Amino acid sequence: MHIWAVANQKGGVGKTTTTVTLASLLGLQGESVLVVDLDPHGSLSSYFGCVPEDVEGSVYTLFQHRVAGKERSLTNVIHPTKAKGISLLPASTALVTLDRQLSEQEGMGLVLRRALELGQKQFQHVFVDCPPVFGILMLNALAACSSLIIPVQTEYLALKGLERMLRTLEMVGRSRQAPLEHIIVPTLHDRRTRAGCESLEILRQQYAGRLWNGVIPIDTKFRDASQAGRPLPEMTPNSRGVLAYRALLEELSRRYGCNYKKAG
Image (cartoon, rainbow, N blue to C red):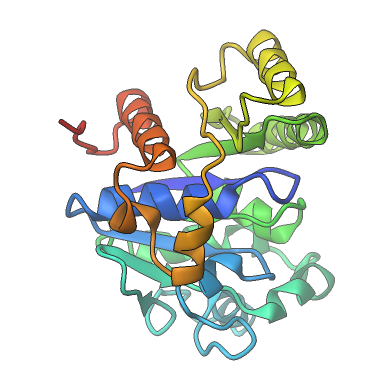
């Protein structure tokens, strides 16, 4: 089982779109995929029709079990979706209280990791959609993951978020006593704008060794797919956005191994 965290300390850079699209490309090839929503806003959960305000059985349940001293299994917290090959561990709005309630309690940074270890035979891949702030939830994702995907919108403010994310990564790497493998992915790129092209060039100059050499373009079809509650690869498999994510997944497979079969 390979666990991918999708994280950046800035919102609106394409984390949920990246999670859904990569998971769908693998699911369509017959792989079993779990997507985990660690963001209290619950965008990933809502995408698949699960309401964070009303959900029974969620990531929050795992933390409740940890406080009660119970085994933190995935039983009763995994929800099926209509997307091929994809199951969901949803968020609850109660997640917003975790840092205040539990940050001082021992072992709270490993709740997700231990739960996934107990359920590792169920899934071949896990994608964890992270909140845009560092706290107990992002810490859980970074402690659990095998590799980290950092989507970065090609615009100036997003570059600042990347700097914060990489500082956090250094801190977590010291705690893990090993660097965390990661790849920076330029997203929402509009090649028609000067700002977009300049930001992409900055990424290529400053992060060449860690940057994917492709880009995820702006594609309005992602918005249509989100409104329909279906992954775009199921709706429009040859849209330019899907083709870009397919190229990214081929690169991830080459670097880390994820059983993705190159199209065509």
